[in-house]
Amino acid sequence: MPNHVTAHIRRVTSPQVTEPAPGTWPNCLVVNSVAYISGMVARGNNGKVVAGDEYEQAKLIFAKIRNLVEAAGGTMADVVKITIFVTDITQREKVWRARREVFAGDFPASTLVQVAALAEPSVKVEIDATAHIGAGMR
Image 1: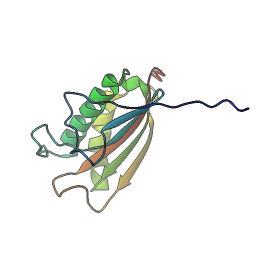
Image 2: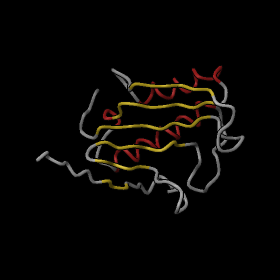
Image 3: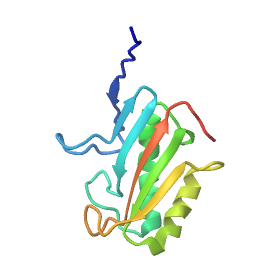
Image 4: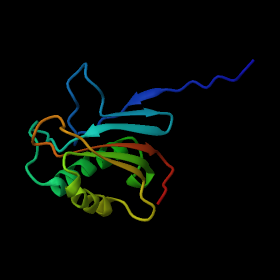
């Protein structure tokens, strides 16, 4: 008889990150020790997109990711994969600047993609992340 591992899915929230409306999606789910963070945009807790360029938006997004990873019991050193969506690939250096302020040593595996549009015209950057809580790559 094979061993069956039962995975438990746990929703993680942070008081610093507004949750989406019920019936949509969670910001963060943890399965065993892996945290899956939905695409984050630079929307403040007031529901409005923060004015600013790609650097400013990415800084806020990485702060939201940090808050969720920490609420899951980890640190940013546990982040192993990020996907970055931008509406203007020529502005990628601004996003990378914000990324360098958050990660050191071996950066997480990363994908950067230009898309035609995001949630609304003022959203220039969206980032999702996967973290293995307790792995501490860096």
